[in-house]
Image 1 (cartoon, rainbow, N blue to C red):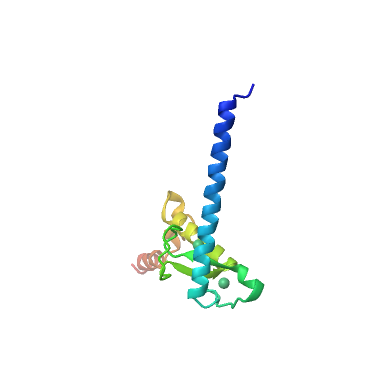
Image 2: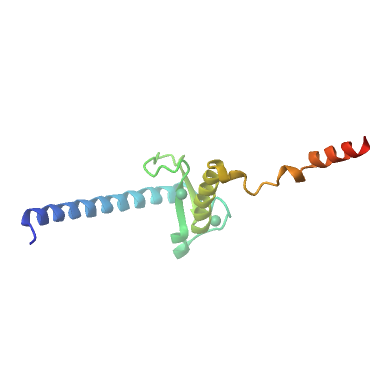
Length: 127
Ligand SMILES: [Zn+2]
Ligand SMILES: [Zn+2]
């Protein structure tokens, strides 16, 4: 049995979520447009140029990764093509992964193969 009060609440919540999504989209469209006016339509990494319908592939990257930080002077924006933008975020994830956790040194060469170990062996032999 469905409770009419709950249904109404769910509707209200859905409406709020939809509204928030719309606002978020408008906000994003807002800063993207500003960034496109502010900067040349060139990817900041691979320097590919964009125009016409290709412009869709040019995205706004937030330098500090805070999408709510949108200073009007564009200091937190960087125009990146979809590929470089993707790469930018993957790189960061990888960097974060390699700096924490005990598995960080896994693919480092073991000490036995270090030049110092070889030197130590030579030293032993010459004695
Ligand atoms: Zn690019
Ligand atoms: Zn980004």
